[in-house]
Length: 333
Image (cartoon, rainbow, N blue to C red; front, top):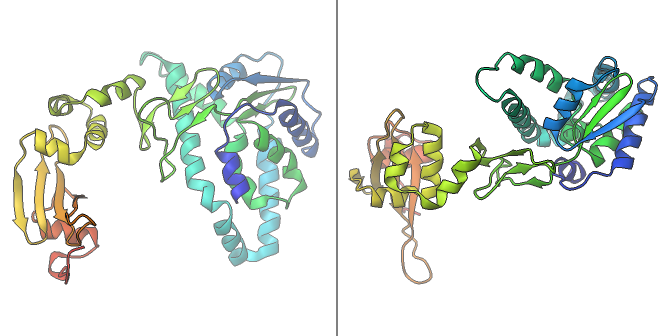
């Protein structure tokens, strides 16, 4: 698992000779003639542009190279292990990488479509671009599937070799377009794209995606975060960007500097509410840890609770999955 987790997150220059050997092996394993041309691209964006402009490449052979071998190997392993054994095997291998890999691949696809469509006046191109994206083999971002079949199927050896050394690729009858791996990848502890001072995902040709804790943001938006004010946050029309601003600015700081007032107090803490135009309220409970720090002070924590919360006790109880009448701690910690 560690091997394929590292493959999925790998950055830096591809090993082009090794990746090309993998491509040719994948074609041979599929019973196809090796491609006449292998063309390199700096990113999935450039890969799509090249794939759309190829002359004389023939039809896509993704099904022969990837889809059918996957299906056959899965069927073989499933038949060998049985339903329960397959479920256990998948849980211990591919399932651990599946959600993160799928989310990243979907985000790359969305970024490519947005970059190529450009102005809103060209939405008709989106379908064609998505069709080309669906013809891609995901290379390193196929790590979840490859982890499940590692060392089990000869027909997947070529695909695994490409994944170890390169990014996405497009197989056609007579030509292949293959992409470099990212030059940068920044994620938070949950595996989401996340960076506050530059692109969260960048490729060597300049294609880049910006994100804050998994949420896509415009590149110029990050430059504003260092100079935020409560007024700027309130005036942001995009509700999702406003939430990013609040997270970066800090709820406690925003409450202090915006003149907010508590809406409820009880022995559990203090309930605060931030009203935002065209968005649901943000409710926070301020709680004080009863266990002192080494210097004798007591740390204050801020708990984000549902906007329907009416009392501090209700909010704290919610964080434990309890109803207010069920929450009676002997000691607040």
